[in-house]
Image (cartoon, rainbow, N blue to C red; front, top):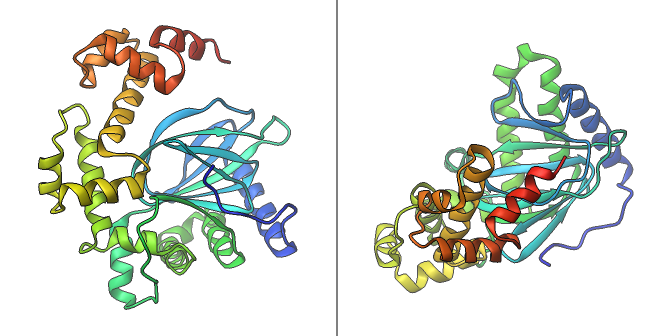
Length: 309
C-alpha cells in the first residue's frame, strides 16, 4: 500500500460546505453515468452510480478530485486511495488502473478531472519567477495529498463557471493558473516542478515515457532510449522506476497488454491478433504475461468482462 495518512471523516466545516456545493454542481451537469466534457476544455465531470471493477487506462497528467465517494488507483504494485479528504495528481502519462469503491443510484460517485499541460506549468514558473518549490528526491509521477480549502475554493470557482458560460473565456484561464500555482506550492509541488523544467533528470524521464507511450509496439532498446533523452542507462533505469514504480520494460509491457485488452474488448480481435498488433511475436508469451497481469488468460478474461452489467 502506498498512500499518505489522512484525517478521518467528516470534513472540517469549511471543506464540507465547499464539497457539498461541488458535488451539487457535478450532479447538475452529469445527467447519467459516465465521463462528460464541459465548456471548459480541460475540465471533465464524472458520475458513477455503482461500484466498478478495476479497469486499466493510460492516465494523462491531471488533477483529480472526488466530491462524493471514494476510489482506488493502482500503479504497478502500489495502491492509492482517495476521497473528498484528498486529491490526486498524475504528473506524467502512465498506465494505471482504478475502481470506484463507493457508489449507488441514490448516492453516486461524483468527481472532476482537470487536465494538466506541463508547458503551462513551465510558463507559470517563467512568469512568476522562483516559487520557493523545494528540490527533493525524485518521487512517483502520481501522488495523493490532503485537500486544503484554498485549492478546493479555486476548483469550485472554476466549476461554477459552467453556470455562467459567458464568463468562461476570460475567467477560466485565470482560475486554471491559480489552481496550478496552488499545486506547485503544495507539499508535493516539486513533482510537477521537476516534470516541467527541461533541465532536470525527471523531465528527461518524462520524455522517455512519452516515447514509450507513442511507440510501445516497437522493440525497446534501452541504450537507444537513454541516448535519446540524454541519460546514462543506469540513471534512466533508476529515475524511471522512481517516477513510475516500473522499469522501462515493465512499463512497455503494461502498455502493450492494456492496448491488447482494449482491442479484444472494443474491436473484437482474437487474442493472437491483438498480441501481434501490440508487438508480441509469441502467442504463448502474450497469453502468459496477460494472465499474470489480469489473473486469467485472454479468452476467460474477455468472457468475464462481457458478462459484467
